[in-house]
Image (cartoon, rainbow, N blue to C red; front, side, top):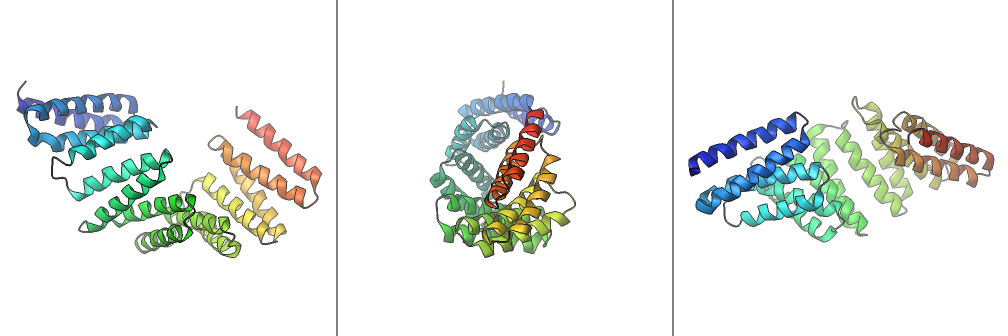
Length: 298
């Protein structure tokens, strides 16, 4: 087969991958993406100028593997893609995407140092675009905030969350789900550092946004009520905390099939507060009801 025909076949394969993915046929898309990568690898054996096609195929294959939770294979594919960028001039946007994707794999696998390095490199590349890809930067800043929090680097975590907030609010306005996520993460950061008053403010902001969003994940809304309840308890406002817990559980019950773990944790915290208030029988009742509902979902 001539190189020209191989190039045409590769383009057809890539188009088919996109079509299969858009049609929800993930396994078929992965298989076709593997074929596209193999075709691209053979193509550059005789025509190194086609390296960009290999990088594109690898990125697409890596994204599909990551979407299917195959993080180990996705990691090796993204690394190969980055190795190939040494042989071809890649535009900053694609390079930033690949680096941020590999960073997310390291992040998921709990390798914070390489994840942080790649996130920072991707942020720099997205910032240099004309115009800058600010929403990508905001999402990566939020990811960095979580990593720095896990590493105990409070100042860096707070700084990245604040930068993420500024971008989301400026571009998307004050009532969007992305903004609520960052407010929630900031609240968790302050709570873990014993800044309970600040944590309350952040969780109230997140809850207000989520209550007013048209399309909001009910689990996220229930989580906001629960986070606020936990913070109010630390501030000694137990009556309001109990009300928020009740609301959280009511919401999470309706989405129990989607998130059993969050429901179980919130019920456990609610029961613990009841015990701390001397209401042992009520605590037992909460635990028994939670166990009953969770068994129904198995």
